[in-house]
Amino acid sequence: MNFPETKTIIRWALTIASFLIVALILWNTNQFFQKFKNEERLKMEVLAIAYENFNNIDLDVDVSLEEKIIASNSSIPMIVTYDNGDIYRWANLGVPNSSKFTSLPEKDRLYLHKQLRKMQAENEPLVVNYKQDNVNVTQRIYYRDSDLLNRLQFYPLGLLLILLLFGTIIYLVFQQNKVAEQNKLWAGMAKETAHQIGTPLSSLLGWVELLRLENTSEDIVTEIEKDVDRLNTIADRFSKIGSIPKLEPTDLVEETKNAFGYIKSRSFKQITFEFKDEHGEPLMVNLNQQLYSWVIENLVKNAIDAMQGKGNLTVTISRENNHALVLVSDTGKGILKRLHKKIFDPGYTTKKRGWGLGLSLTKRIIEDYHNGRIYVKNSEIGKGTTFAIELKLIAS
Image 1 (cartoon, rainbow, N blue to C red):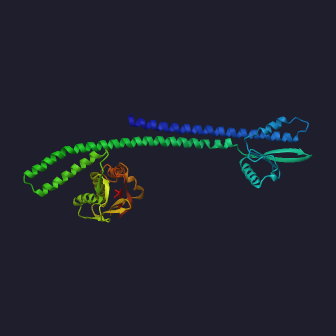
Image 2 (image 1 turned 90 degrees about the vertical axis):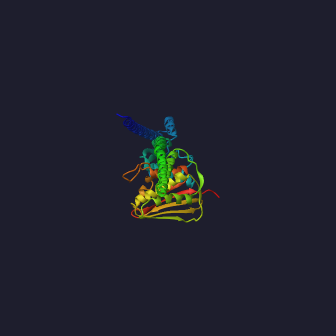
Image 3 (image 1 turned 90 degrees about the horizontal axis):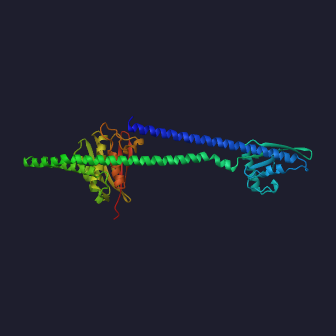
């Protein structure tokens, strides 16, 4: 058994054990609650018997025990009514029991009636029968759960919330560690890629000079040199992943136009490229030129792929309050709304080839390195997609 399988088994074992522990605690709490509730019922039954004996016993008989039992109820709210429903006595409800019900303020009478309805719905009443002046009298003792028992009902919920909180914290910690490991891995891969590209690049530069000495057409040599410089730029970009890039005040319009123009000159002729500068003036932002041009190239290349080499591609730059807005629009196949955020996840791709890192790195460059935003502004299946980039302008 390899290490990843062992980790998975341990994770599942801990999860199942946690659920079993929670289930056991909840079951035990429920058992305790039912036992406590039954004890309160038993206590009220004893009180009802004491109340009945107290009213039936002759005046010359000692009733101190009954009085003590009746007085011992200091926690369970109760109301005693006559057979016709009129309230006779009450206890533990925050209303003084020193006067008759009819002489109480109206708000207290309304409160007691409200409590009586609750008690009637919550527990079966205890019936008390006794004789008064040779007349049979029937009274009913209504009660509800004590405040302690009511608070105990919410104990399992509180326990679950605490466990959920701890579980969330643990999940976030593990998730953060996982993301940190992924970032470290990507940074290492990027730097290694830059290193691997650097060796053949040096050779290519030598070959370019050799072509010049061989009197090769200067136009051909110049174009090859441009592509070699581009490869050098790409290697430099990879070397910057994982480290904090240097940002400098840059005209976003000019930088976007340059990156857009490079891809345009090397793309299919069936695609109509359009660059719109709606602001008409330089838009200064703090920018790392190499990483930003990578973002534009990624978005434009994705748009070309989405249109399968044929359609209209437009890059629009404008200003919205203190932000610059860059829109990259295509007439491609579109993106489902439920995937608008998922497409930025590392590894997600709809292409047969590729690692699904392009948009993920694009998001990281814009949001982590430039404190901006990148998102799908709108998309319609069969009609096209518009990506938006927002960057904060330098205060003038």
